[in-house]
Amino acid sequence: MKLITLDLRRSRRPRPSPEPLDEARTVMEFPAGRGGPPVHLPPPLTVTVKHLGRTVVLAVDGDVDLHTAPVVQRAIESVLGTRPRRLVVDLTLVRFLNSSGLEVLLAAHRRAGRDTDLRLVATTRAVWRPLQVTRLHEQLIIHASLPAAIAAPSRTMDEDRATSNTMGKGERSTLPR
Image 1: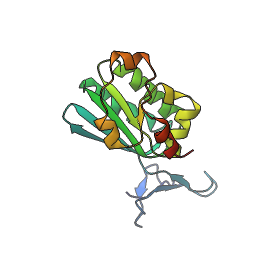
Image 2: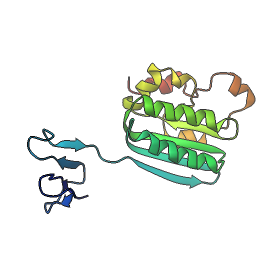
Image 3: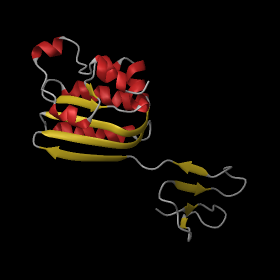
């Protein structure tokens, strides 16, 4: 990544900075008196898609917020367009999840319907807590590990009528609170 310095006094075009930038973040500097202190932007969101037969694993790495939720939504919609038997959304590397991210997950659950078995993997408090506070953990199928989500049996009609959460009491106690 390159550091871009905006200097509105000389030119309207950004020019690359000669100094190297740490890959962990992007810094944009504004001229003195114009925008205050430098703005530190978080690293970009990474979405990885892996096909395992008729199961697709979509791994998300980064913060899922108002700015990055559309990226996750497009990735999920793209995968659901191929009509996989099971879609596992792996959120183990997500460091922040807000209402925009929750809406994307709920919309994916609705769109998957009966055609695709949607599973989530939530192992951190940053993901588990928003799901719990909004009670989405009662509507979505959540697993404590990726292998458990992949290996779990498919839902049946009886399970659709009952609660859809596959985490037992023992599994919930292992998640951060």
